[in-house]
Length: 321
Image (cartoon, rainbow, N blue to C red; front, side):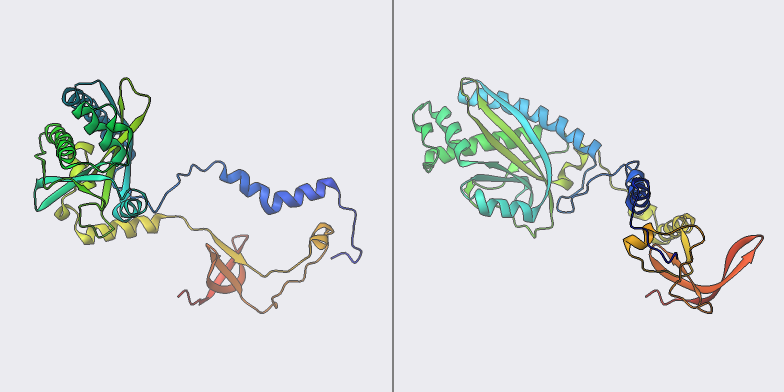
């Protein structure tokens, strides 16, 4: 290295150094398409399958609109707001924190096989039973507990939604498996179950206020609608799967770097380097070259040459544990 340190860094030199330590990598990454992956949200259905579920939800919303209009003798507009996959523990947390007053109706093919629940927030419940009773004033108090008669009317409305679900697909035969309950979700969940939550916006034609109704359905129950079919387990033996994975791994390219040695320099020293300067590395001439792949040292060897190119003769296998 030159004995005289050059303290006058030119603009060109600084740009060259910045490009060497970061700019080129940043430019390269802009060409890579990435998708954000949320590990806290299940990915039971693909985007195309979720699109089919959205279509199903829109048709269901139209049928709920007609049912509410007929039952309440007043025009309603029900639209789908969102279709989101959840793990059960997230839904249980949401219920315990902010939805302890919601009303729930479990449903399934039989009492021993629950498929989901109809969830109605207390405010929505009050508005709907008010419309059924024809009382325009009672709906103003959304915090008022429902009477036995009002809970019975709410059960009729929630049961009507279950009936709509049962008739929306040939494979479904859903029935309410209990009465309307308030508070805790009426499902025994371990927390790892995957459910799909359909949120519907409910709006009376002559009102500016919008309320919600939710459907929570186990993802596996929705497989026929989403077009998800399970592959036969005996169609792919474990040995064939293992072999296919190993074959694919063996074809993957791996970049291997031969590292002769390294040196630690200050920023000022790097900027002062000139042609014919000599860098003293941290390795002796009799020490082996290191072969590095993906940041891990796999082998050691001796520098050599072959066919006019640099080469390394592997002399040692490193402990990769």
